[in-house]
Length: 345
Image (cartoon, rainbow, N blue to C red; front, top):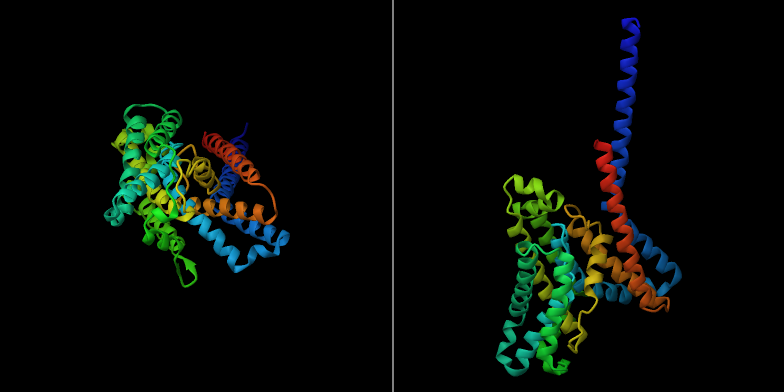
């Protein structure tokens, strides 16, 4: 074959390969943007859909209700996202919230001077539960799914033994925490402002600090992270402690919001927080997603719940939607991971 022909064939092959690489990068970009921007678009679609089906949906009073419902779920979902970044999860988060809600309130019923310590004690109790989870997962090397499924029952059992079947009513709680949760500033619920502030702070931590970068690193590629000197066990432990602390704060707010504190408070919140995370683009495979996405996911869950009520549908449909969201989000993550591996091969 003449040199000119060989050169032309080689150039044609390189051009074809380059086109394939550009197409692959374009597809990858579309998929990544779909993961990051998809939740916001989905929220807009839901708002349009529910408004078309129920004109009452866009009333100011109803939007306030949605934000009020989403606020505490947002805080709990941010807590769940922290461990999801590390390629773990916390199925005990509902029980952690319950413990942080019930135990301080129980102490307050016997000692009113404990009132100013309600929030700090809830955060500490949540952090202790998180420390237990983190120690079992990180140092006990027990898979997070198994470990936190076990502590879900253990922590809830502790609450049952302390409560002995007794409820703590609104009249037995500190008035200031009840007023705080119900308060508004400029027509906006104070707990919504608190949730936004926590989400903003969490976003800064994850994007601009070495701690946040380290959590992403150990979730994205645990072996490489350890190779580069990151202490994976310590970071996972810290993530669970932070998750527990945030969940504890959310649990106290939830107790004040619902009024009567029972041993079953926050039951099922592990599914809601996981659903909020994956809907918001936080991968269960670790190393990707963001706090803003988790917050939007929580808002989507609250919007779906409210919209179904507006349409007169039962709450079981919300559980169905949450389960489907988790399955579809995980399937998308697996597809994206495999596509990225294939395209880079």
